[in-house]
Length: 108
Image (cartoon, rainbow, N blue to C red; front, side, top):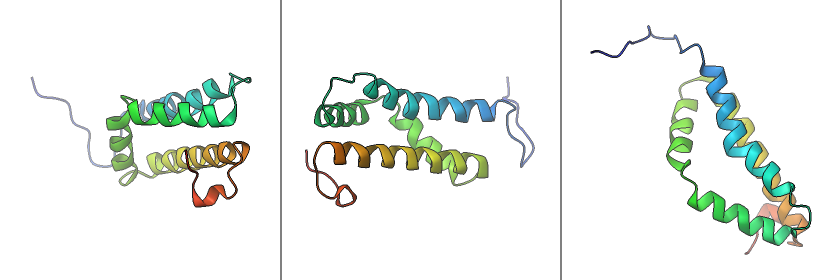
């Protein structure tokens, strides 16, 4: 059985929902989960975030989302927002952990 195809320029009707799920699951939920552990020092949150980012099974999806964002304006807006949220959170954690200039990166 052949897969249905959409005409050029048309997208699945649940595209917005898929993009929202990607942002919620792979950015917002991770940050919220780390922030929910209020007693955890910033350095430990940073370490947990690094572990999560390097072991997460969502990596192939992240690559696919970036490829989609290169071709689709709505996906690009979501990817830009995800990137800004992630970078902002990393900067905040680095500052809280006592690293002097988070824009230069932090050392773990």
